[in-house]
Structure formats: structure tokens, C-alpha cells
Image (tube, rainbow, N blue to C red; front, side, top):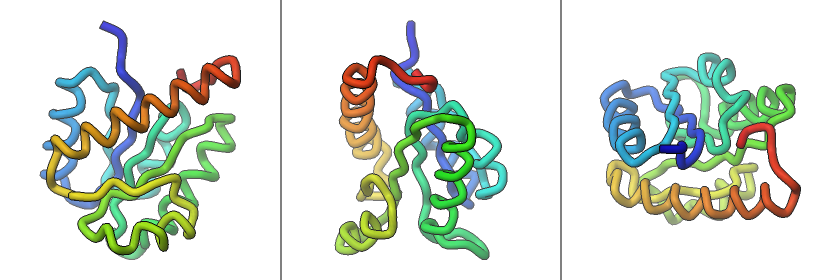
Length: 136
């Protein structure tokens, strides 16, 4: 079975990463997880979507996303960056900070999977109109 998409998940909680990875891999995604922004930067080069926790030790999600965006661009990759949060009231603020979107209902992996499926449809449509992608 072909992968539904290449996903990077950045969170400072290993149990959260394990739950998300297990669920998304069972659903057909190629998932890489990272506990730190530095580790995530090593893995973003071929990812189509990066899911980023906002509250990280010593760094905000926005700072992490900006680091990842630079690493992705250096690898000539067009990854999309989504914040994973329990606070949907700040979605517009997070998007204005540079995130491509916000996944709400953090902790609900079923909701995350549905939101990711919608994102991957957009990624595939974007790739089709551009004639492909290095991450695809």
C-alpha cells in the first residue's frame, strides 16, 4: 500500500508522539517524530506536513516552525506547517505568525487524523497543479 503522505510530528511529550505515530501509521502515513526542534530539522527535508506543538521547553512553536521552514526550504522541499493545540481561539494569531493552519482538539487523535486527511488532499491538489513535488 502506498503511503497516504509523509508527516513530521514535533512535540516534547514522548507518550503523545507515540499515540499520534501509532494511529497515523496504522492509517497509512509515513510518520517521523521528534522531541526537539533541532531533531525535527534533521527530518523535515522530505516531509509534506509538519505538525508542531506550541509549548516546547525553551522555544515556542512559532520559533520551531520558523526553524523547520528554513530547513525545509534549504532541502528544496515545500512542507506545510500546522500547529497542534487545545486553544482554537488563537487560530488566526497562529496563522498570522506563519503557520499554514491549525489543528485543534489536541489529544483527540481521531480528529487529528480527519484534519490531516483534509490537509493531504490540499497537498495533493497543490502538487498536481505544480506538476509534482520532491516530497511526493
